[in-house]
Image (cartoon, rainbow, N blue to C red):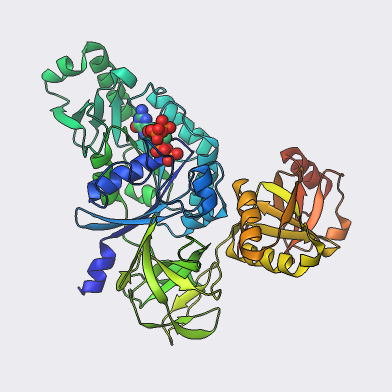
Length: 530
Ligand code: G4P
């Protein structure tokens, strides 16, 4: 087998999803510590003195101390080359978060054991489920009082509609947290808290479940509980079925504590065993094999002005097949031109390193002067193909936007259109009035501040944002329904996106239901496939 195929086979590319504060950053950091990509805890997010994530790129992020953008981290572990696609965990996440999930082959869902499934997890999960990618669950913070483990699994199954299969099982939680039982090995890994700092691993002692010493080690009460629960799992639970994991129908579940570095190694062990190398992608109905086809990639994210020192745009692309060599000539399908990819680089938080080569499964950032758009395909000349587009997701916050200085209309329209093309915001026009009224829709409200900031700093155009009372948007399916016939209340608004797709803005879910009830034949879409 050639070296290229070996390199591709050892790659694993996954996204981490969670609700803010569940411990995604801490877990990512522990993965990187294991992989030797960083040396000290706190490198991903300076914890003690500053709340800044290393992935802070824009001033506004620094001011707020939160991460707006997503970053990509690569590390080696046990012969695997692992790419983690980080998704912003703060409430003010953006459509980029959804799009990043398009580049992943699997997802790790971090859940706070004391809280269960939370709002943002549901949204991110839905996007993963749409793609049927494998989803692994890490129930975190077991060193704090957690909900009953069976209840947690039930919560995941009921709220998310995915079956669960615990790979390990916790013994107690909070002060009573004693460790986890590995169901395959039939072994208990005991937990002993160690200092948090850059410690690589919690101290571990392992006992077989049949070892008489186990009872003393965990105490009679927890021992009896464990034996009962394990029996219940073995009798009632289904065995882990790899095929169902691959299809995203069953989520393997792990318990642990990222902060105290407990449960990370077993997680990585099983995760790497159960996930596959880069998955094939579809281009115009044809399945493109990652290992045997030549270089191809698609753009899933465009990042403007990542850093004052580099005033530029970076297009992030996920390599879907073959090998990329710096300096090779590629073909940009949508731009219909041959070109070289300039300054190909890997971006890890604030540091960027120029790369010489990359393989299917990897993500590279390339310098872009405005040619690439989200969803574009890059391949080698003569081997033309076009990957399916990246869907657009309905935002949840809306403002009317206008320029303060009426003389600056041109800058205003140019700036806002360009920022919309990058994909952080969506812009809509009134259904009948064209561009005289512009509405901007975002997935997370911080994007409004980003927009204001960028319009002032990059386009010298001060803008006014007036919040609108809508909280939902749906595209109208093109099935022959005539928008002029729409029966509606005053609480909804008809509009069009920049590609003239009709859409409706709603104040609440109830408005959506009523509108559907009152309009036979109307079909609404939350995600617009391209
Ligand atoms: P996020 O990226 O998902 O938003 O979460 P993050 O890792 O930043 O963790 C949120 C908070 O939860 C942090 O505490 C972190 O230290 C804590 N945490 C993460 N994993 C665990 C765990 O396994 N056990 C316990 N007990 N806590 C955990 P913080 O006080 O909000 O922040 P900081 O001051 O420690 O930065």
